[in-house]
Image (cartoon, rainbow, N blue to C red; front, top):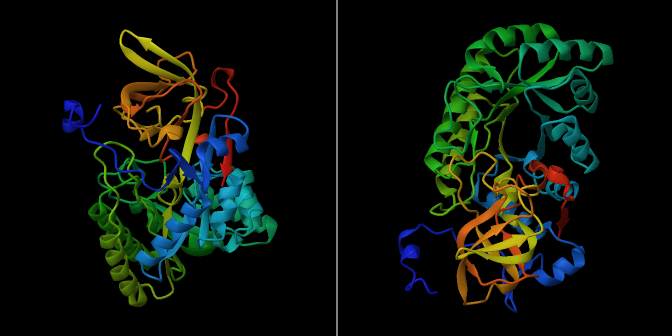
Length: 418
């Protein structure tokens, strides 16, 4: 059915065009390989595939768009696959980790320990000991952590490198997930910072700066600019209480990518201009500080796809269901069960029928015995049959590692970097 013949398509918002993957012989091309051949090469479905050329391209685009003085960190919680982390470690200026497990992956991947920062509100004593011994920068998130780090540093004879994660008195407006402002488990409330900095000054630890992260998944540049400006000015005020000059100022991230109908890609130009102004200010107001932005999904999200094979085609009371061999157990986000209030479809297609004109309304469902296992709800898709390959775009972030892969005893999926 054409758009002209389908009145629903005229009214409903549509997904942003997924043009990062070319089409050859009617198939998507991922990492230079046609999808059917890539699936044969992987040897099984379901799988995630991450296109290394797109990862390099995204970092290159950011380098061109943003001021040269801004350091770029990869928040590896977005995609901790070791091969991806290894690639990213050679492209960005630093890696941000959120557990000792991620720290090991980053170090094994060859990331410079001096450019690794470690955040998280519930760091165990053993994790803090590992971080001190590894000489990475630790984002202190409570008075408890400060006390533990002092004891660990004394025992190891090695002063911990620390920045203080601040829970600001504002939040990132329009963000998909708010990480600061109001009561939060993250960081130390801004109003408590002077007391913590007094304790830090007596601790003998190596203070380096501040970490602020107001929110994530934001497509409004004006909101990101406002949060960056407020973060900078808050850090500037807190620097008056700091025991040493600020050398490190992480302004967070928040850069979003379009997932759902009606969303458009983030305009980097206002953000770049805003960061340039902040850099100019920092040269006189915080002359020893390096300004850092911390990005995860924006760097990797659009470079990945989830591929699952259709094992059955069913029609139930007029509705077409395409049943696949993978579902929410591998891709919780696409099922709508990872933070969505109202479920919305990710961009989905039938990857080996990308050039097909004939289309139908169909739902893509996984193999799990629950109605929550829904990957696409009544979407206009190329007409598909058993054996075809359903593809979920925007799957490079918060995919395999954020999904309950042991749920109902189905097997794990495979990840490949191509």
